[in-house]
Figure 1 (cartoon, rainbow, N blue to C red):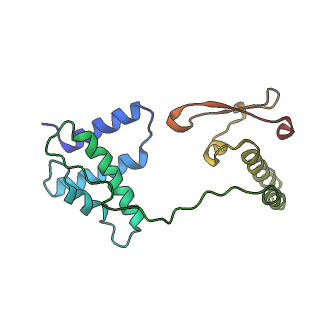
Figure 2: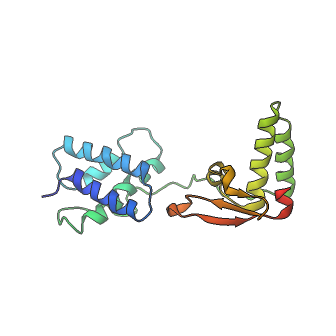
Figure 3: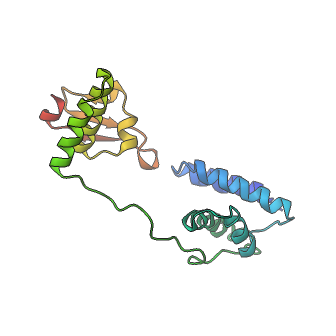
Length: 182
């Protein structure tokens, strides 16, 4: 019989082989296994999943829902191998609607941010922040992608950015307008 720890390790290995990073989820599942071991549980149960997910008393309901989602995804996988596994229902701990709304900045707002960046006292920081904001505005790349750029990823002559390690561990090329390269 496979232990819950072995089942979690197998689940994470398979998902990671598909390109998922699962750093936070891996840590959470490790905590869930410790929780189950302390209670003598060999299988995922709805009661245990809910008790564990809501254990940080006073935490935001969205955090509880996120924790339960991690266990639910594992339980769905594990149910194929263990008939005693219970999969928590989807709407058991619903997320609250307090997520930030996506925001598109107007050209005037972007210009104001670029001007504000130029006012940093440290000239290197001013140039870095201005370039960072301008690059994201001109290309549409994500914050993490811009932060992950190295000098070798930027081809100003070919007007191309190489974005490495995007979602699912892939890389992609992003064209850059000549006005951006100046």
